Image (cartoon, rainbow, N blue to C red; front, side, top):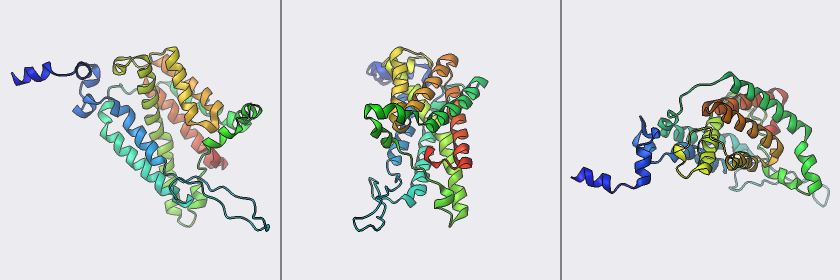
Amino acid sequence: MADDSSRTNESPANNDIRHSPFAIGHSPLVTNYPWLTFLLPFIVYLVVGSFEPSPPKQVAQLPDGTPATPISNNWFGLEYRHYAVVYTTKVTLTIAAMILVAPGYRQFPFRVSLLAILVGVLGVALWIGICKLGLERKLLAPLGLEKLLGLGERPAYNPLAELAATPAWAYTFLAIRFLGLAVIVPIIEEFFLRGFLMRVVVSEKWWTVPFGTLTAAAAIIGTAVPMLMHPGELLAAFVWFSLVTWLMWRTRNIWDCVAAHAVTNLLLGIYVVTQHQWQLW
């Protein structure tokens, strides 16, 4: 009787979740709170990332003509030299969150198509090309919106220079930076953006929406949100995320989106390091 009563009092929403394909083979935590898989790692990444110190702003000179001390615009008083420790902490905690919700990733059969790899390669060429041409600045300057680009200033941290006194740590952190860039970010961003956000736009019962379902509102959100996340590269973000939205619609496979993202980020990282274009990460 007790068991029957508990089922009778169960909310319709929880009942729908527990009897959906999402619940099959997953942990109770992920089954009862399906949003954790898509949101928790992303939130951890953003929250810890908010502690990352940005490069200090250089003031040209004091009134008497002497060089001024660079001004740090960090929120939490951390110096630029702390960047590697904060970033490593961010990656570590994000991985811990991903492990916690890992059963939820298994709802999507893992497969990657050649098309995803090609999109990733095309994507990095477009991203670098648009950034190198400075198209965002050329488009925004006439509108008086050039200051928006400053909001997306990247850390531009060069571990080979900043950590030159400790080469072992410099190369270790470089590996950690690539881990975050080419593995962690593609998974957490694609699961948040396409696995959750674009589906919740389609239906409040988003976990029942087949992956790859695309509406006008979902397409707009899938481009607008990444543009807000990359204010310094608005046009590049518009082109790249639109391309991956097309890939999502074409293959209906979230791991293709992750793979394309990973390929773009990996090649971008290689470009940054080999060409010393640190401002791009």
